[in-house]
Length: 547
Ligand SMILES: C[S@@+](CC[C@H](N)C(=O)[O-])C[C@H]1O[C@@H](n2cnc3c(N)ncnc32)[C@H](O)[C@@H]1O
Image (cartoon, rainbow, N blue to C red; front, side, top):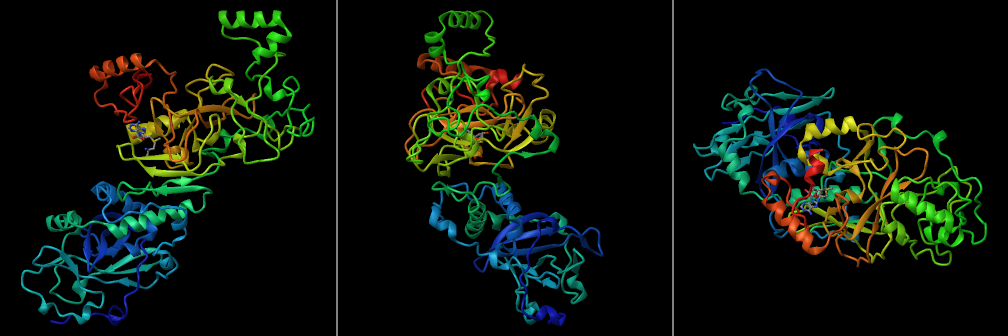
Protein backbone atom coordinates (compact mmCIF):
# COMPACT_ATOMS: atom_id res chain seq x y z
CA UNK A 1 0.00 0.00 0.00
CA UNK A 2 1.23 3.42 -0.82
CA UNK A 3 0.67 6.35 1.44
CA UNK A 4 -0.30 9.40 -0.40
CA UNK A 5 1.83 12.09 1.01
CA UNK A 6 1.72 15.70 0.09
CA UNK A 7 4.58 16.52 -2.23
CA UNK A 8 6.32 18.68 0.31
CA UNK A 9 6.68 15.73 2.66
CA UNK A 10 8.47 13.72 0.06
CA UNK A 11 11.01 16.41 -0.51
CA UNK A 12 14.30 16.48 1.36
CA UNK A 13 13.74 16.46 5.08
CA UNK A 14 14.40 19.71 6.84
CA UNK A 15 16.15 19.75 10.14
CA UNK A 16 13.88 20.80 12.89
CA UNK A 17 15.20 23.07 15.59
CA UNK A 18 13.14 22.36 18.66
CA UNK A 19 12.43 25.23 21.05
CA UNK A 20 12.21 24.73 24.78
CA UNK A 21 8.95 26.62 25.10
CA UNK A 22 7.22 24.29 22.64
CA UNK A 23 8.00 21.11 24.55
CA UNK A 24 5.69 19.61 27.07
CA UNK A 25 8.15 16.91 28.07
CA UNK A 26 10.65 14.33 26.87
CA UNK A 27 9.04 10.91 27.07
CA UNK A 28 11.70 8.46 26.06
CA UNK A 29 14.87 7.90 24.10
CA UNK A 30 16.21 5.32 21.70
CA UNK A 31 18.92 4.73 19.17
CA UNK A 32 17.80 4.58 15.59
CA UNK A 33 20.34 3.79 12.89
CA UNK A 34 23.01 4.66 15.42
CA UNK A 35 21.50 8.08 16.07
CA UNK A 36 20.26 8.93 19.55
CA UNK A 37 16.72 10.22 19.43
CA UNK A 38 14.26 11.60 21.95
CA UNK A 39 10.52 11.31 21.96
CA UNK A 40 9.12 14.78 22.45
CA UNK A 41 5.58 15.55 23.52
CA UNK A 42 4.58 18.93 22.24
CA UNK A 43 2.51 21.67 23.70
CA UNK A 44 0.82 24.48 21.78
CA UNK A 45 -0.45 21.96 19.25
CA UNK A 46 -3.79 22.30 17.56
CA UNK A 47 -5.50 18.92 17.35
CA UNK A 48 -8.80 17.55 16.26
CA UNK A 49 -8.94 15.06 19.12
CA UNK A 50 -8.35 16.54 22.57
CA UNK A 51 -7.30 13.11 23.92
CA UNK A 52 -4.30 13.00 21.67
CA UNK A 53 -1.05 14.70 22.16
CA UNK A 54 1.49 15.13 19.45
CA UNK A 55 4.73 13.31 19.89
CA UNK A 56 7.68 12.92 17.59
CA UNK A 57 11.19 11.57 17.65
CA UNK A 58 14.06 14.01 17.30
CA UNK A 59 17.78 13.38 17.03
CA UNK A 60 19.94 15.15 19.58
CA UNK A 61 21.24 17.44 16.82
CA UNK A 62 17.77 19.03 16.65
CA UNK A 63 17.65 19.69 20.37
CA UNK A 64 20.48 22.19 20.79
CA UNK A 65 18.00 24.83 21.95
CA UNK A 66 16.59 22.66 24.69
CA UNK A 67 19.64 20.79 25.91
CA UNK A 68 18.80 21.73 29.50
CA UNK A 69 15.64 19.69 29.27
CA UNK A 70 17.53 16.80 27.68
CA UNK A 71 20.07 16.98 30.50
CA UNK A 72 17.33 16.84 33.13
CA UNK A 73 15.78 13.87 31.33
CA UNK A 74 19.14 12.09 31.08
CA UNK A 75 19.85 12.66 34.78
CA UNK A 76 16.43 11.42 35.79
CA UNK A 77 17.10 8.22 33.86
CA UNK A 78 20.44 7.87 35.63
CA UNK A 79 22.11 7.48 32.24
CA UNK A 80 25.76 8.51 32.36
CA UNK A 81 26.14 8.23 36.13
CA UNK A 82 28.08 5.00 35.81
CA UNK A 83 31.76 4.80 35.06
CA UNK A 84 32.72 6.63 31.93
CA UNK A 85 32.67 4.01 29.20
CA UNK A 86 34.30 5.05 25.99
CA UNK A 87 33.29 8.60 26.70
CA UNK A 88 36.23 10.16 28.42
CA UNK A 89 36.24 13.85 28.00
CA UNK A 90 38.75 15.35 30.39
CA UNK A 91 38.15 18.69 28.84
CA UNK A 92 41.33 20.60 28.93
CA UNK A 93 41.75 24.14 27.68
CA UNK A 94 42.51 23.14 24.08
CA UNK A 95 39.34 21.11 23.65
CA UNK A 96 37.27 24.11 24.67
CA UNK A 97 37.81 25.47 21.18
CA UNK A 98 35.70 22.68 19.72
CA UNK A 99 32.37 23.79 18.37
CA UNK A 100 29.15 22.11 19.21
CA UNK A 101 28.04 19.97 16.29
CA UNK A 102 24.60 21.53 16.62
CA UNK A 103 25.92 24.98 16.27
CA UNK A 104 25.51 25.19 12.52
CA UNK A 105 21.79 24.40 12.78
CA UNK A 106 21.11 27.29 15.04
CA UNK A 107 19.84 29.70 12.43
CA UNK A 108 17.80 27.40 10.34
CA UNK A 109 14.40 28.61 9.27
CA UNK A 110 11.41 27.12 10.99
CA UNK A 111 8.44 28.41 9.11
CA UNK A 112 7.92 25.44 6.89
CA UNK A 113 6.87 21.87 7.26
CA UNK A 114 9.16 20.57 9.95
CA UNK A 115 9.29 16.84 9.48
CA UNK A 116 7.29 13.71 9.23
CA UNK A 117 7.92 10.41 10.80
CA UNK A 118 5.96 7.27 11.44
CA UNK A 119 7.23 5.10 14.21
CA UNK A 120 6.83 1.41 14.17
CA UNK A 121 7.82 -1.43 16.40
CA UNK A 122 9.95 -4.19 15.03
CA UNK A 123 9.94 -7.83 16.12
CA UNK A 124 13.01 -7.09 18.20
CA UNK A 125 10.99 -4.68 20.28
CA UNK A 126 13.27 -1.88 19.23
CA UNK A 127 11.61 1.08 17.73
CA UNK A 128 12.46 2.30 14.31
CA UNK A 129 10.99 5.13 12.33
CA UNK A 130 10.27 5.21 8.70
CA UNK A 131 12.43 7.84 7.13
CA UNK A 132 11.00 11.25 6.50
CA UNK A 133 10.45 10.46 2.81
CA UNK A 134 7.96 7.97 4.16
CA UNK A 135 5.80 8.16 1.06
CA UNK A 136 8.34 6.12 -0.83
CA UNK A 137 8.32 3.26 1.67
CA UNK A 138 5.56 0.75 1.35
CA UNK A 139 4.12 -0.42 4.68
CA UNK A 140 3.37 -3.74 2.94
CA UNK A 141 7.03 -4.53 3.25
CA UNK A 142 6.63 -4.73 7.00
CA UNK A 143 5.88 -7.98 8.77
CA UNK A 144 2.44 -8.32 10.41
CA UNK A 145 3.58 -7.87 14.01
CA UNK A 146 4.63 -4.34 13.21
CA UNK A 147 2.31 -1.85 14.80
CA UNK A 148 2.14 1.80 14.37
CA UNK A 149 2.81 2.90 17.86
CA UNK A 150 3.37 6.56 17.91
CA UNK A 151 1.26 9.03 16.17
CA UNK A 152 3.53 11.43 14.44
CA UNK A 153 1.90 14.15 12.59
CA UNK A 154 3.52 16.53 10.23
CA UNK A 155 4.61 19.43 12.27
CA UNK A 156 4.36 22.88 10.96
CA UNK A 157 5.34 26.08 12.70
CA UNK A 158 3.12 29.02 11.99
CA UNK A 159 2.73 32.23 13.94
CA UNK A 160 4.77 30.80 16.78
CA UNK A 161 2.60 27.69 17.17
CA UNK A 162 3.15 24.11 16.14
CA UNK A 163 0.43 22.61 13.95
CA UNK A 164 0.07 18.89 13.43
CA UNK A 165 -1.67 17.19 10.57
CA UNK A 166 -2.92 13.69 11.25
CA UNK A 167 -1.43 10.94 9.19
CA UNK A 168 -4.95 9.55 8.95
CA UNK A 169 -5.67 12.29 6.52
CA UNK A 170 -3.35 10.53 4.12
CA UNK A 171 -3.99 6.87 4.84
CA UNK A 172 -6.55 4.91 6.84
CA UNK A 173 -4.01 2.26 7.69
CA UNK A 174 -2.34 4.47 10.27
CA UNK A 175 -3.82 4.00 13.69
CA UNK A 176 -4.08 7.01 15.85
CA UNK A 177 -2.80 6.24 19.30
CA UNK A 178 -3.18 7.99 22.57
CA UNK A 179 0.13 9.71 23.03
CA UNK A 180 -0.77 10.77 26.54
CA UNK A 181 0.00 7.26 27.80
CA UNK A 182 3.45 7.05 26.28
CA UNK A 183 6.11 5.78 26.70
CA UNK A 184 4.91 2.21 26.57
CA UNK A 185 6.73 -0.77 28.07
CA UNK A 186 8.63 -1.57 24.87
CA UNK A 187 9.91 1.93 24.58
CA UNK A 188 11.00 2.01 28.19
CA UNK A 189 12.77 -1.32 27.79
CA UNK A 190 14.55 -0.13 24.66
CA UNK A 191 15.54 3.11 26.36
CA UNK A 192 17.05 1.22 29.25
CA UNK A 193 19.36 -0.55 26.82
CA UNK A 194 20.37 2.62 25.03
CA UNK A 195 23.39 4.55 26.27
CA UNK A 196 23.40 8.21 25.39
CA UNK A 197 26.95 8.84 24.28
CA UNK A 198 26.40 11.54 21.64
CA UNK A 199 23.86 13.21 23.90
CA UNK A 200 26.36 13.35 26.77
CA UNK A 201 28.86 14.85 24.36
CA UNK A 202 26.38 17.46 23.11
CA UNK A 203 25.51 18.44 26.68
CA UNK A 204 29.19 18.66 27.56
CA UNK A 205 29.88 20.86 24.57
CA UNK A 206 26.94 23.06 25.56
CA UNK A 207 28.54 23.61 28.96
CA UNK A 208 31.97 24.23 27.45
CA UNK A 209 30.41 26.92 25.32
CA UNK A 210 29.44 28.67 28.57
CA UNK A 211 32.95 28.21 29.96
CA UNK A 212 34.46 29.78 26.86
CA UNK A 213 33.13 33.12 28.09
CA UNK A 214 34.76 32.80 31.52
CA UNK A 215 38.49 33.42 31.90
CA UNK A 216 40.63 30.63 33.30
CA UNK A 217 37.89 28.12 34.03
CA UNK A 218 38.02 24.49 32.91
CA UNK A 219 36.03 21.31 33.17
CA UNK A 220 37.20 17.78 33.87
CA UNK A 221 35.29 14.54 34.27
CA UNK A 222 37.30 11.34 34.56
CA UNK A 223 34.55 9.57 36.47
CA UNK A 224 31.48 9.37 34.25
CA UNK A 225 29.76 11.14 31.36
CA UNK A 226 27.74 13.72 33.30
CA UNK A 227 28.11 17.48 32.94
CA UNK A 228 27.37 20.31 35.41
CA UNK A 229 23.88 21.76 35.03
CA UNK A 230 23.38 23.61 31.76
CA UNK A 231 20.88 25.90 33.42
CA UNK A 232 23.72 27.36 35.49
CA UNK A 233 24.78 30.83 34.39
CA UNK A 234 28.26 32.16 35.11
CA UNK A 235 28.12 35.74 36.35
CA UNK A 236 30.85 38.21 37.26
CA UNK A 237 29.05 40.13 39.96
CA UNK A 238 25.94 39.88 42.10
CA UNK A 239 22.64 39.94 40.24
CA UNK A 240 19.93 41.72 42.18
CA UNK A 241 16.44 40.28 42.19
CA UNK A 242 15.23 43.77 42.89
CA UNK A 243 17.19 46.96 42.19
CA UNK A 244 16.18 48.29 45.57
CA UNK A 245 18.42 45.71 47.24
CA UNK A 246 21.51 47.42 45.81
CA UNK A 247 23.50 49.86 47.86
CA UNK A 248 22.91 53.32 46.50
CA UNK A 249 25.98 55.03 45.17
CA UNK A 250 25.41 57.89 47.62
CA UNK A 251 25.72 55.50 50.55
CA UNK A 252 29.38 54.75 49.79
CA UNK A 253 31.91 56.66 51.81
CA UNK A 254 35.55 56.53 50.76
CA UNK A 255 38.76 57.44 52.53
CA UNK A 256 39.51 61.10 51.87
CA UNK A 257 42.95 61.66 53.34
CA UNK A 258 44.83 58.92 51.51
CA UNK A 259 46.49 59.49 48.13
CA UNK A 260 47.89 57.11 45.46
CA UNK A 261 51.51 58.09 46.02
CA UNK A 262 52.09 58.77 49.67
CA UNK A 263 55.49 57.04 49.74
CA UNK A 264 55.52 53.59 48.22
CA UNK A 265 52.90 54.28 45.51
CA UNK A 266 50.53 51.72 46.97
CA UNK A 267 47.65 54.02 47.95
CA UNK A 268 46.63 53.72 51.60
CA UNK A 269 49.66 53.31 53.84
CA UNK A 270 48.86 54.91 57.18
CA UNK A 271 46.25 53.18 59.23
CA UNK A 272 45.30 56.22 61.23
CA UNK A 273 44.78 58.25 58.04
CA UNK A 274 42.64 55.70 56.26
CA UNK A 275 38.96 56.23 57.08
CA UNK A 276 38.09 52.85 55.56
CA UNK A 277 39.87 51.16 58.46
CA UNK A 278 37.71 52.82 61.11
CA UNK A 279 36.07 49.49 62.01
CA UNK A 280 38.96 47.27 60.96
CA UNK A 281 40.95 44.93 63.15
CA UNK A 282 42.90 46.77 65.88
CA UNK A 283 46.68 46.51 65.63
CA UNK A 284 47.23 45.39 69.20
CA UNK A 285 51.02 45.22 68.99
CA UNK A 286 51.22 48.77 67.75
CA UNK A 287 48.75 49.95 70.39
CA UNK A 288 50.73 48.22 73.14
CA UNK A 289 54.01 49.72 72.04
CA UNK A 290 52.62 53.22 71.55
CA UNK A 291 50.00 53.58 74.32
CA UNK A 292 50.08 50.98 77.08
CA UNK A 293 47.27 52.61 79.10
CA UNK A 294 44.92 52.56 76.16
CA UNK A 295 45.99 49.03 75.30
CA UNK A 296 45.15 47.76 78.80
CA UNK A 297 41.76 49.44 78.70
CA UNK A 298 41.10 47.93 75.26
CA UNK A 299 41.95 44.40 76.49
CA UNK A 300 39.86 44.88 79.62
CA UNK A 301 36.84 46.09 77.59
CA UNK A 302 37.22 43.15 75.24
CA UNK A 303 37.16 40.74 78.16
CA UNK A 304 34.21 42.29 79.92
CA UNK A 305 31.82 43.34 77.15
CA UNK A 306 33.31 42.03 73.92
CA UNK A 307 32.22 45.33 72.37
CA UNK A 308 34.91 47.98 72.22
CA UNK A 309 34.90 51.45 70.77
CA UNK A 310 37.93 51.23 68.52
CA UNK A 311 37.72 54.76 67.14
CA UNK A 312 41.19 56.34 67.15
CA UNK A 313 43.03 53.08 67.81
CA UNK A 314 45.67 51.91 65.31
CA UNK A 315 44.20 49.42 62.83
CA UNK A 316 45.49 46.63 60.63
CA UNK A 317 45.53 46.63 56.86
CA UNK A 318 44.24 43.29 55.65
CA UNK A 319 46.76 42.35 52.98
CA UNK A 320 50.47 42.27 52.30
CA UNK A 321 51.81 45.00 50.05
CA UNK A 322 51.53 44.46 46.29
CA UNK A 323 54.81 43.67 44.57
CA UNK A 324 55.12 46.53 42.11
CA UNK A 325 58.08 44.93 40.30
CA UNK A 326 56.37 41.60 39.82
CA UNK A 327 52.58 41.62 39.68
CA UNK A 328 52.59 37.80 39.54
CA UNK A 329 53.53 37.67 43.21
CA UNK A 330 50.14 37.50 44.93
CA UNK A 331 49.11 39.75 47.77
CA UNK A 332 48.18 37.67 50.81
CA UNK A 333 45.75 37.92 53.66
CA UNK A 334 47.72 38.75 56.80
CA UNK A 335 47.81 36.16 59.57
CA UNK A 336 45.65 38.00 62.11
CA UNK A 337 42.83 38.24 59.60
CA UNK A 338 43.40 34.73 58.31
CA UNK A 339 43.08 33.29 61.80
CA UNK A 340 40.09 35.37 62.82
CA UNK A 341 36.61 36.00 61.46
CA UNK A 342 37.26 39.72 61.51
CA UNK A 343 35.66 41.57 58.57
CA UNK A 344 38.01 42.93 55.94
CA UNK A 345 37.41 46.48 54.77
CA UNK A 346 38.56 47.30 51.27
CA UNK A 347 38.64 50.74 49.66
CA UNK A 348 35.91 51.70 47.22
CA UNK A 349 35.27 53.92 44.20
CA UNK A 350 34.78 56.99 46.42
CA UNK A 351 38.22 56.60 48.00
CA UNK A 352 41.08 58.88 46.97
CA UNK A 353 43.82 56.29 47.22
CA UNK A 354 43.77 55.21 43.55
CA UNK A 355 43.43 51.83 41.85
CA UNK A 356 46.80 50.49 43.00
CA UNK A 357 45.88 50.81 46.66
CA UNK A 358 46.93 47.75 48.67
CA UNK A 359 43.44 47.56 50.15
CA UNK A 360 41.90 46.54 46.83
CA UNK A 361 42.26 42.86 46.18
CA UNK A 362 39.00 40.94 46.28
CA UNK A 363 37.24 43.66 44.29
CA UNK A 364 39.61 42.95 41.37
CA UNK A 365 38.26 39.44 41.08
CA UNK A 366 39.70 35.99 40.57
CA UNK A 367 43.19 35.76 39.10
CA UNK A 368 43.84 32.03 39.48
CA UNK A 369 42.76 29.35 36.98
CA UNK A 370 40.23 26.88 38.33
CA UNK A 371 38.86 23.53 37.16
CA UNK A 372 35.41 22.20 37.97
CA UNK A 373 35.86 18.44 38.22
CA UNK A 374 33.75 15.42 39.01
CA UNK A 375 34.58 13.92 42.39
CA UNK A 376 34.63 10.16 42.66
CA UNK A 377 32.97 9.81 46.06
CA UNK A 378 29.40 11.02 45.88
CA UNK A 379 30.08 14.69 46.35
CA UNK A 380 29.10 15.73 42.83
CA UNK A 381 31.32 18.38 41.30
CA UNK A 382 34.25 19.96 43.06
CA UNK A 383 36.87 22.59 42.28
CA UNK A 384 40.65 22.61 42.17
CA UNK A 385 43.12 25.31 41.28
CA UNK A 386 45.45 24.67 38.32
CA UNK A 387 48.28 26.54 40.03
CA UNK A 388 49.88 26.22 43.46
CA UNK A 389 48.21 28.51 45.97
CA UNK A 390 50.08 30.04 48.87
CA UNK A 391 48.61 30.41 52.32
CA UNK A 392 46.47 33.55 52.45
CA UNK A 393 46.07 33.84 48.65
CA UNK A 394 42.74 35.08 47.38
CA UNK A 395 40.82 32.62 45.22
CA UNK A 396 37.38 33.97 44.34
CA UNK A 397 34.10 35.22 45.78
CA UNK A 398 30.77 33.45 46.16
CA UNK A 399 28.38 34.98 43.66
CA UNK A 400 24.71 34.55 42.90
CA UNK A 401 21.39 36.26 42.92
CA UNK A 402 20.87 38.67 45.81
CA UNK A 403 17.47 38.04 47.36
CA UNK A 404 15.65 38.82 50.57
CA UNK A 405 15.37 36.35 53.45
CA UNK A 406 11.68 35.92 52.72
CA UNK A 407 12.39 35.07 49.10
CA UNK A 408 15.07 32.60 50.25
CA UNK A 409 12.52 30.93 52.56
CA UNK A 410 10.05 30.75 49.71
CA UNK A 411 12.60 29.20 47.34
CA UNK A 412 13.68 26.75 49.99
CA UNK A 413 10.09 25.70 50.62
CA UNK A 414 9.52 25.28 46.87
CA UNK A 415 12.55 23.22 46.07
CA UNK A 416 13.14 21.12 49.16
CA UNK A 417 16.21 20.35 51.19
CA UNK A 418 18.76 20.55 48.35
CA UNK A 419 18.20 24.27 48.05
CA UNK A 420 19.90 25.26 51.27
CA UNK A 421 23.22 24.11 49.82
CA UNK A 422 23.30 27.13 47.56
CA UNK A 423 21.81 29.78 49.81
CA UNK A 424 24.34 31.90 51.62
CA UNK A 425 23.00 34.38 54.16
CA UNK A 426 24.79 37.70 54.52
CA UNK A 427 24.28 37.53 58.26
CA UNK A 428 27.72 38.59 59.45
CA UNK A 429 26.46 41.87 60.86
CA UNK A 430 23.19 40.67 62.36
CA UNK A 431 22.59 42.70 65.49
CA UNK A 432 24.28 45.80 64.10
CA UNK A 433 22.58 48.75 62.41
CA UNK A 434 19.12 47.17 62.39
CA UNK A 435 20.20 44.00 60.57
CA UNK A 436 18.35 40.91 61.74
CA UNK A 437 18.13 37.26 60.67
CA UNK A 438 14.79 38.16 59.12
CA UNK A 439 15.86 41.14 57.04
CA UNK A 440 19.40 40.21 56.04
CA UNK A 441 20.10 39.52 52.37
CA UNK A 442 20.81 36.08 50.98
CA UNK A 443 22.89 34.95 48.01
CA UNK A 444 21.35 32.19 45.91
CA UNK A 445 24.04 30.48 43.85
CA UNK A 446 21.97 27.61 42.49
CA UNK A 447 21.18 28.93 39.03
CA UNK A 448 23.79 31.63 38.65
CA UNK A 449 27.11 32.29 40.28
CA UNK A 450 30.81 31.66 39.93
CA UNK A 451 32.93 28.52 40.08
CA UNK A 452 33.01 28.69 43.90
CA UNK A 453 29.43 27.49 43.82
CA UNK A 454 30.92 24.06 43.09
CA UNK A 455 33.30 24.04 46.08
CA UNK A 456 32.54 21.18 48.44
CA UNK A 457 32.48 21.05 52.19
CA UNK A 458 35.21 19.56 54.33
CA UNK A 459 35.41 19.29 58.10
CA UNK A 460 39.16 19.93 57.71
CA UNK A 461 39.13 22.48 54.92
CA UNK A 462 42.05 24.04 53.08
CA UNK A 463 40.18 27.30 52.34
CA UNK A 464 38.11 29.69 54.41
CA UNK A 465 35.51 32.25 53.55
CA UNK A 466 35.93 35.83 54.81
CA UNK A 467 33.69 38.85 54.91
CA UNK A 468 34.92 41.63 52.63
CA UNK A 469 33.10 44.92 52.96
CA UNK A 470 33.54 47.98 50.76
CA UNK A 471 31.45 50.31 52.76
CA UNK A 472 31.56 50.28 56.52
CA UNK A 473 28.28 52.23 56.66
CA UNK A 474 26.25 49.62 54.81
CA UNK A 475 26.66 46.19 56.30
CA UNK A 476 23.78 44.57 54.46
CA UNK A 477 25.83 43.86 51.38
CA UNK A 478 29.38 42.54 51.25
CA UNK A 479 31.46 39.91 49.47
CA UNK A 480 32.06 36.37 50.64
CA UNK A 481 35.67 35.80 49.66
CA UNK A 482 37.56 32.50 49.65
CA UNK A 483 41.23 32.50 50.58
CA UNK A 484 43.69 29.60 50.82
CA UNK A 485 43.97 28.72 54.50
CA UNK A 486 47.18 26.80 53.86
CA UNK A 487 49.56 26.21 50.94
CA UNK A 488 47.54 24.21 48.41
CA UNK A 489 49.39 22.44 45.58
CA UNK A 490 47.88 22.64 42.08
CA UNK A 491 45.25 19.95 41.49
CA UNK A 492 44.28 19.48 45.15
CA UNK A 493 40.55 19.91 45.72
CA UNK A 494 39.57 23.21 47.33
CA UNK A 495 37.21 22.86 50.27
CA UNK A 496 35.74 25.04 52.97
CA UNK A 497 33.70 24.36 56.07
CA UNK A 498 30.04 25.07 55.25
CA UNK A 499 29.35 25.66 58.94
CA UNK A 500 32.48 27.78 59.40
CA UNK A 501 33.15 26.17 62.77
CA UNK A 502 36.39 26.36 64.72
CA UNK A 503 38.63 23.32 64.53
CA UNK A 504 38.54 20.89 67.42
CA UNK A 505 41.17 18.40 68.56
CA UNK A 506 41.21 15.06 66.78
CA UNK A 507 39.97 12.98 69.77
CA UNK A 508 37.13 15.38 70.37
CA UNK A 509 36.18 15.34 66.68
CA UNK A 510 36.04 11.54 66.62
CA UNK A 511 33.94 11.46 69.80
CA UNK A 512 31.50 14.00 68.34
CA UNK A 513 31.21 12.07 65.07
CA UNK A 514 30.50 8.79 66.81
CA UNK A 515 27.82 10.47 68.92
CA UNK A 516 26.31 12.10 65.83
CA UNK A 517 26.18 8.77 63.99
CA UNK A 518 24.25 7.19 66.84
CA UNK A 519 21.83 10.09 67.25
CA UNK A 520 18.47 9.06 65.70
CA UNK A 521 17.69 12.72 64.98
CA UNK A 522 20.38 12.63 62.31
CA UNK A 523 18.62 9.95 60.28
CA UNK A 524 17.89 11.41 56.88
CA UNK A 525 20.58 14.06 57.07
CA UNK A 526 23.09 14.38 54.25
CA UNK A 527 26.12 12.31 55.25
CA UNK A 528 29.43 14.09 54.91
CA UNK A 529 31.85 12.36 52.57
CA UNK A 530 34.80 14.68 53.16
CA UNK A 531 36.81 11.68 54.36
CA UNK A 532 38.92 13.64 56.85
CA UNK A 533 39.93 12.34 60.26
CA UNK A 534 37.96 15.13 61.93
CA UNK A 535 34.81 14.55 59.84
CA UNK A 536 31.67 15.42 61.79
CA UNK A 537 29.63 12.82 59.96
CA UNK A 538 26.94 15.06 58.50
CA UNK A 539 26.91 18.08 56.26
CA UNK A 540 24.60 20.36 58.12
CA UNK A 541 24.80 21.27 61.72
CA UNK A 542 21.68 20.08 63.47
CA UNK A 543 21.24 23.10 65.71
CA UNK A 544 21.53 25.33 62.64
CA UNK A 545 18.95 23.34 60.72
CA UNK A 546 16.48 23.53 63.54
CA UNK A 547 17.00 27.22 64.15
C1 LIG B 1 27.37 24.08 47.11
S1 LIG B 1 27.15 22.49 46.46
C2 LIG B 1 28.76 22.04 46.05
C3 LIG B 1 28.83 21.57 44.64
C4 LIG B 1 28.20 20.24 44.42
N1 LIG B 1 29.14 19.17 44.72
C5 LIG B 1 27.66 20.13 43.02
O1 LIG B 1 27.96 19.13 42.33
O2 LIG B 1 26.92 21.01 42.60
C6 LIG B 1 26.75 21.60 47.92
C7 LIG B 1 26.32 20.17 47.69
O3 LIG B 1 27.45 19.38 47.35
C8 LIG B 1 27.42 18.13 48.01
N2 LIG B 1 28.53 18.09 48.97
C9 LIG B 1 29.41 19.07 49.23
N3 LIG B 1 30.31 18.68 50.13
C10 LIG B 1 30.00 17.42 50.49
C11 LIG B 1 30.55 16.47 51.41
N4 LIG B 1 31.60 16.75 52.16
N5 LIG B 1 29.92 15.27 51.52
C12 LIG B 1 28.85 14.97 50.78
N6 LIG B 1 28.29 15.82 49.89
C13 LIG B 1 28.86 17.02 49.74
C14 LIG B 1 26.09 18.06 48.73
O4 LIG B 1 25.16 17.49 47.85
C15 LIG B 1 25.74 19.52 48.91
O5 LIG B 1 24.36 19.72 49.03
